[in-house]
Length: 299
Image (tube, rainbow, N blue to C red):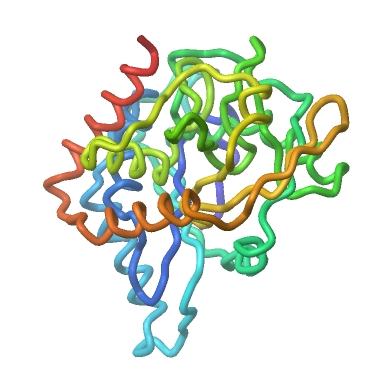
């Protein structure tokens, strides 16, 4: 579907999106993706129909089935929700509904190698702006990430640890960060910046359900430097170990890419996913889970 010149996502970044992994005809983390879309769309004042979006996803998957003659065992499906068309300047035309687009992409094959070698990171010079209203939301305004990815490319590494303008670690350019220290998993709070990834939310739910000690808080790069191990999470890579981080003084700190803690968090994610139901009736309650999680972090 061509994007019209009056599209609000194109003109103003007025929209949200999510990127999911389709594996062997199944949309992984589907309920979390739909819940996040609903939460994020609501956060910027868009009304979406998750039932219709789910049906569109299933139809897209069916079109890539053996019966259709076109099959990829593993690929990426991006769901993009635009604020629609038109409106005067920044103001929306509320008569025009949001527009949902689905696009198919190749799965990043190099992830399979990185699971065993681990990620090489730098600390980005680009800092994330603090905006609590949009904290946690995966909106289509991604200029900060474009600049960070440029740093990553120039440094010839895999990704970067990103802080906010007050020096708090927030995430990586492509996912959320967890690190193990003092016998617990820790992850940065998204009280003012960052994206609440579906794997991050899934792991936090699993920690709570299984009474696993963990901490959501404000951390500096010095605390990352002292961690036993570090992982980056997102919907495509799931749990990816970090091999090294080059900090601002150009000194590199190494971390194990295999071991008990990394295996335990990977197993926890897999186990929790197997227990999940994907009924749409649970999407609204799951959306509340996203909202409640972020409200706790803001406080």
